[in-house]
Length: 571
Image (cartoon, rainbow, N blue to C red; front, side):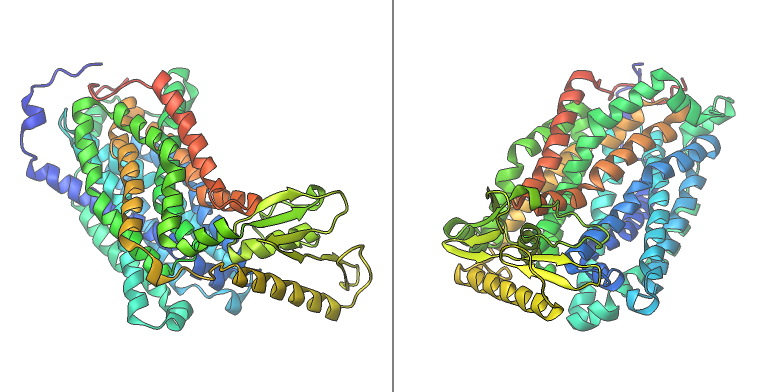
């Protein structure tokens, strides 16, 4: 339905009440994202603290899975709190969500680690992540709906774009607090106990956020609807049980949010994982470069949100998806070139090849750390993945013991076959009986041979700080962040405008959190596993590119522009 508003709505200055609404909603949401992102920013430390019972590679993947657990339940939080928001109001619902988020984050800061209480530590940690995910599932829809329903027609893109900055600002704030703690203490102290400080600080932010939100009034659109007795009595049934509304939910998910989510998490999280885990850039330096890119790129949320009020939301979002699909590979190759040129040079001059029988190669995804990589192929690939060394695969005849070629040097792998009595059989050919001492010796000899070959071929153990072109890395990271602002800046306004007031909170929250919680939240884990399986450090990018391309096609064909609709409509 077109909205016949006067031109003055779009050009008048923002009122004091509107500024308070935007400030209060945005600041509270910044703190909530800060809480949620602390875990992602500290994945490596948390893996060591809470998943120390498994090997480092499995521990890191397990930590990413726990990170993703918070995303997995976000759609359920959207259902629970979306229903409450459409029935009792926007304001009180996201007061509850921030209390749950803040308290869950604070408890992480005082939770004993694996060494203290064993398996209970990761179980409790994952439980707290689930509570955080539920709370966040109700937060975003409430804040975006609340701000949009206060905005005048013709300004919704601009007003809601401030909410869109909060996720990035929350990540930025978490990185700054973590960096401050790292600078103030030794690495040993930070890894032992200093990492808890950012979580403990959240109790102060919680108090500020609750105080701010208590000052807010209910949104005018919801208040008017409730006074007229037109609010929904069964928002879940109306949203998902009626095809006319369910169809819009599906279009919002597959034609907008799924692509937006993978672009967002590639530009902010996967870029950080790529720098630290693949390129072996020092964590502090990587965080500083990401923070700088976020600082430069964040104003573009408001720029693109404002532009969306003029030319529409859809053209900007679709353009961001297209650019991501076309340029991700060259951008990440550029990051490698400028962040770790020694690795790029080693790959070019002495490529690593795993020569193995494909039938004895397993998928190198071991989230619970229980799998034993015992075939010669698995042992070879596991050793390379642990070192962050990219490789290609070459097929060997059936029954051949795997080997690793580093340039012209060949390092034979070995087979470790667990026996019922835990004695291990080892071989560089057919399996023969061996003692545990032989197993340890064979593994040590293989590791030494591989390490010496990689060192001779000039594969760096870590990125050399003296060779990092910081300016160029930040520039490329900023491009990734600008893609994020293109797809994310206008999307809150568009989602609000797609649904009627009576079921808006519920209807927009679910596709948003399925898209960002599942398609986006699982991106680091999925991409990391793809890289581990293929050996190609860039192969993980296929996941966001394929999802973004599918969303681009669906969005162009089936999603309609929304900037001129009347968001006060109840039906």
